[in-house]
Length: 138
Ligand code: FES
Image (tube, rainbow, N blue to C red):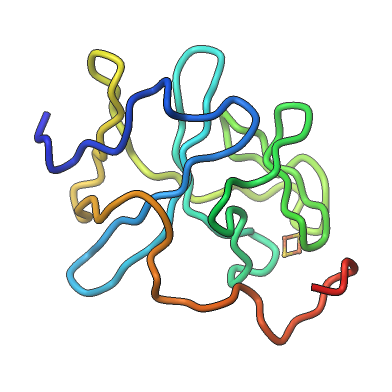
């Protein structure tokens, strides 16, 4: 696999959180997250299906509760392996998948239309969900 598409080693992906990275299509950047599964990893676009301007991982890992990715805005939970929302206001929806491959313990981006931009946030947005107040007051 092309080293330019290397995202991270599987063992760098936390079991109780997510690893944020950025992909690029021309000048457009999007964030995605890697999650650790019992038998590998999965990757999802970094936004909730309820309000798509709400990021799941704001830079230090999304919350993971009982094996589900938790949106801290209104409490939706998404299964790590399928992206299926099994609770919350967007129940029944799915996170948008990002294609990856794992070779020799290393995760590579397999999305043909995107290039790997780097680990961490895209820097294209500021403070997530500014202007919208959730029940924690943030
Ligand atoms: S924005 Fe994620 S549950 Fe509402």
